[in-house]
Length: 249
Image (cartoon, rainbow, N blue to C red; front, side):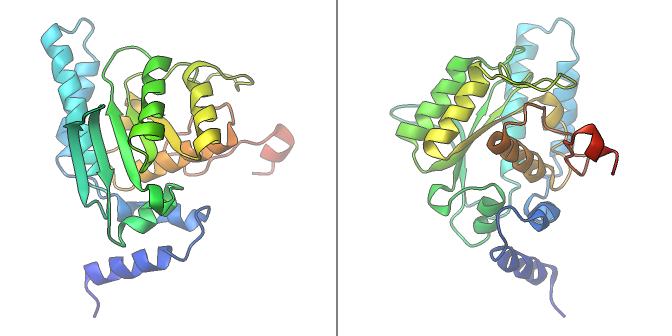
C-alpha cells in the first residue's frame, strides 16, 4: 500500500501534465500549501495589534516584525521550497526571496503561471497603516526587471493594499492609475506578475491551500483587469456576469 508521501508524489507528477489554466490545479492547492501550525498564533497576535486605536511606536515595530515572521512561515510552507532567504545585497534589501530546484516546485510554478526559468518569488512586507504608494511598487518592478531577473513573481504583504486597487464593495473600475497602472504595464512589458495582499487576505493564510488560491485569483485578475476586488477564499467560484446570465446560476 502506498504511503502518504508516495501518494503526494504521484499527485505532483500528475499535475505536471495539466495546463496552467486547468481548474484541477486549484483543487490541489491544499497539497502544495500546508500551513505551518505556528501561523495560527502569529496571525492572532497580528490581528490584535491591528485593532489597536492608538498603537505606540513599540507596538508598531512589533507589528512589522510579526508581519515579516508571518511572511516567512507562509512561504516556508510551500511544497518544494529549497531556498528561502532574507538579505542585503550590493544593490537592494530583500525581505524574502523564495525558490525551489526540485520537481516538487514545478507544479507550484505552473499553478502560479510562472515560467520555470523565472521560478523565484520576491516578497516585500510593508506594515504601514496606509496604502502602498507607487514609489514602493516601482522599486519592486525595478528589482525584478534589472537586479533579480530570475524572479517571475513579486508579492507585497500589506495592511491596506495599494493605491488605485479596487476596494471591497466598490463599483467596477473603468480606469487605472498609480500602483494598479504600474502593475499592468510591468506585466505587459515583462510577462512577470506583481500582486498585493491586504490584511484580510493575510489573516486567511492559516488554512491549507489558501496562499495558492489567493495568488492564482490575483494573477488571473491581472490578466483580465476586471476592475473588481479579488473575491474571498470562502467564495469558491469567481462569478462576474451580467444580470441576464447571473439569473441562470
